[in-house]
Length: 147
Image (cartoon, rainbow, N blue to C red):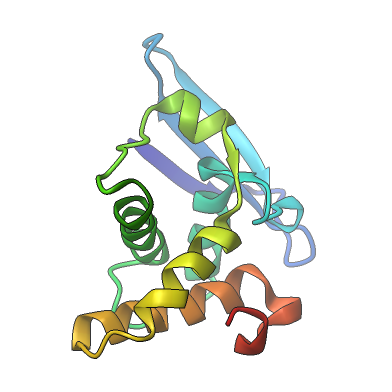
């Protein structure tokens, strides 16, 4: 389980999310993630978690999702199912804290086919793709960049 807090040193110019998690060594480890330093094109799941948690904290929430992380992980599962034909269940502290991936590319892959499915759930998840892409890449938040 991961607990997220905004640190006392956090400012609107340099937001810092502190994550605490009990790891397999039995100890609780603490990580400070500077949100502005997160690169969604090359980030750990922990960094994406901190980024999306902070976005929710400041009111930038994915409509229809329990929270931003839930929307992101639902799309990641869709991508794994489409890519591998099964869920890879990429969990565990080493993956969460150390393995870098391209969150934007994953969401773009899901969006490329999800947007064409004529079903209310698919339309909702395609909307999550749009919202997450805008949230993770606010400089280039037009959909033309993702089609």
